[in-house]
Length: 113
Length: 115
Image (cartoon, rainbow over all chains, first blue to last red; front, side, top):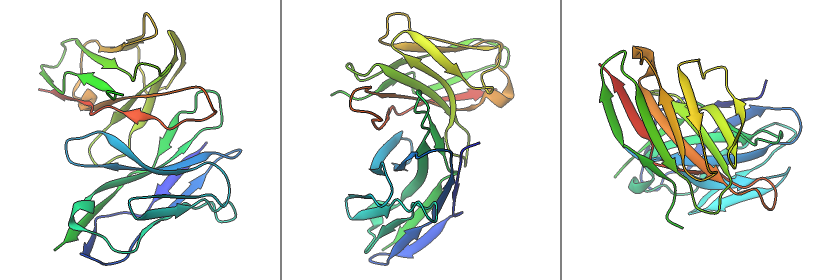
């Protein structure tokens, strides 16, 4: 079945460091791909999305490119801030009529001042 | 757009009791999803509604779980005879059906603790 694999955390970085969180997927068809962020005690917030191969999603300095040939959707940010500390989830949306999400296990990011 | 609202935020109950959670989706969204998230894991799909019709249920949704969306607006998730393993965060999400596959908007969740 469909699945998402994320790099394990926690990831600890200093402020202004470069961030990469790896995400690969297995799916039939051509799913849409998403990154969500979860701050403590809150629900998931959409960070960015891509709906077809070679699409680049971007938001708040974060970027991810839908790579069909490597079945990847890695999250990157050039310069992280303390406020980026959160848990990041990669997800795919199934291509069936329900469009339910399959999530990765999440990667906790901690940014130190 | 007031966002997805879930109630209560926290529920503590004794094993064997019944609990019910409520989700109010974004008003124009006709797709509604329930997910369960345990500590250190990503959310897992439980069930899906399109308007009032429940169109898919995960195998995670045992006979003790039931979900409804009676008028295609708010939804309820009931767990009967709760067990320790039911302790989790229960997330509700909604999305629109127009213009293809739209992102899901999540509520803040209901955290269930079974004593």
